[in-house]
Image (cartoon, rainbow, N blue to C red; front, side):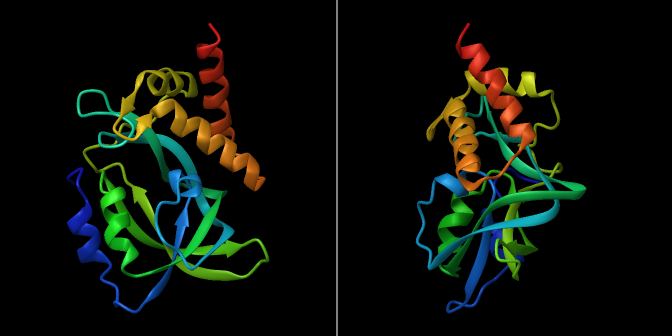
Length: 189
């Protein structure tokens, strides 16, 4: 699959112009909310784990040196926390551009902090996209993140901002926090 998934997302999930849709954010959509939304609520999804296995050629890296950003991997029994945003359908025109580097929209069941549920859309970069970097140790990922930078800033800031945002939400993510620890150790050398 191509790195640029804009057209595929438009084709896969056509939305009525007047539709209002929940969107689940688990990465930069938690802390970098540059799109209009009608509501936002802490939420989680089951059987998915956040991993820094996706390449970023357009935001936190370049074609020659892609950064590493998060995607979701199937993980039976896991719970991934984030933020759900209620958005008008037109917002997906902007979001599909922002998330075009290998991410496809999928429907998912979300659980809000009050225990209620709703179906929403989530962007996931699957292993079959050209930008997928795959599994590596948290230390190797930290070293990679420390050197990458792109038009949206340093890859390191992406990781550190996500770790901070997860703490503010009261969410624990061992993968993210282990990478953060390695990055801070690398920076203090």
